[in-house]
Length: 117
Image (cartoon, rainbow, N blue to C red; front, side, top):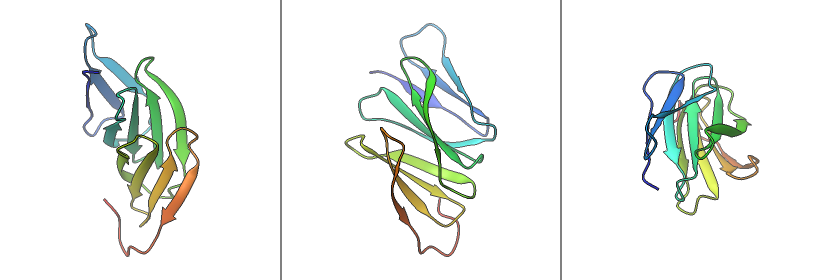
């Protein structure tokens, strides 16, 4: 899949590819700080200052899951190489590992003494 995604201190994400107009993903109510496209190119994960991670269906432009678990701003997000897991980091001094299909928390990594970017 030839797709490119962009965001930048806004509440939306722009997806560019073979479509004539970019696809705009809207749903976060605060700034989107980071995005990651799944290895198969079908999903996108986004991290936001609204304290959530969202998983999007790139074929439909819709939200698949909203992941709640962080208590502060979420700074970064990344799919694992096989696409089964998502890692997110937050100002709450944690990294959460999520199952990218169910949205369940797999592990919470604690021990940092400041925000994790």
